[in-house]
Length: 296
Image 1 (tube, rainbow, N blue to C red):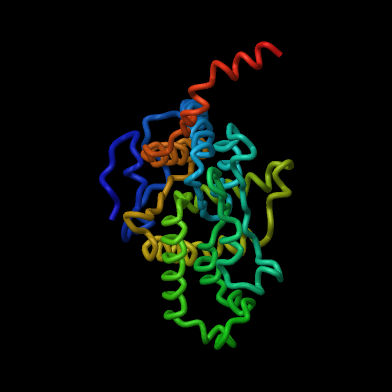
Image 2: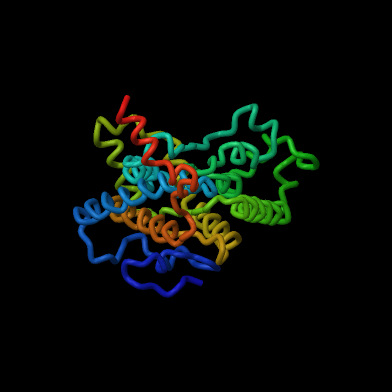
């Protein structure tokens, strides 16, 4: 189900139960031009940056922001624009690519565990632990690289195997949330037509050529499979306590603004996140400490 929405609220984008991606818009219906969205984004980002400072001082929570989306959905540029106002020490971006040989010597969640944010900080996962039930479902032969017991061929990877993975991911998220991590799961919902336009732009504009890969076309040919497995992953792991946010991504400025607005509304609801007060002893002697400094 999709919660009932109000304009300027995150409810429209919040998924807590089964949905159909086909029925969800890839374009925003905000009464907002791209230019106004950029200006509004800047104001929200300033608030988020100040919140991160407060969260750092409070030192009990951290934030994990997971971003998924098809190729060209705008993940990299979104991260750049939304977090550029942050103190560089307060946000860490992790980009999960093909597992290294070291990572393959551990379980599939290990590399995500060790990249979790420290208290008071933000971590952004550009592609996430969900790749293990997305790319791996489209290309199940990838699982063979994990060298798992009783998995000798693709035929051994049954539906029961995937159901266990969804359950493990749910348990992982519940565990980190119970230990002070504020979890966000975003799917940047891009249309196939807009992806085509962006891939053509990579080919037509010389400065963007380096972004193009023949693999982009091979993966685009599997569009329907990816959409099916994205929908399945969302439906298996969206709960009231750990919702997904499906954000229309055909307009990058509006997508970034909606994304930031979701962060703002959720984070500012944590009323217990405040800067700590000085202890009574220091408060009592502030005048004395000031006098020492002024008389140096």
